[in-house]
Length: 144
Image 1 (cartoon, one colour):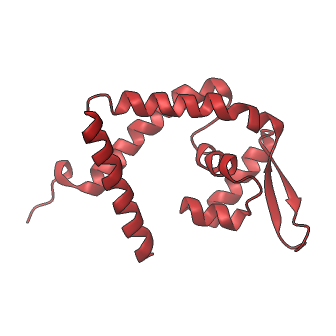
Image 2 (cartoon, one colour):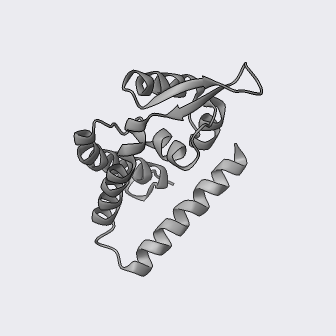
């Protein structure tokens, strides 16, 4: 059996992710955001006050990568770290007012990018595509 990148789920998913990243980057750059911080912001917009460990688990990224991302976010005025009231060893990641104010325009930018990217699919195809990606992600998470 020969390998063909055009029939490789991993290759195609990676290529598609790069294209999505490029499109999203162009849309959120004017907001002062990057695609590196965007996933953490999405989690924090839903659940402000998560720990670094919780973000690592939710985003499936390495601890060191998350630490660097949070340092950049703190530098850029998007988050602040607060000691947990019940366990002083734990730091909670809290959004700043600036980050909260960016939620709606950033989500609108991501929605527009998704709509553009899926515009060649019917509504049924889009739903099926998203469902299949969710299924694959869930299965891969169970293995790790």
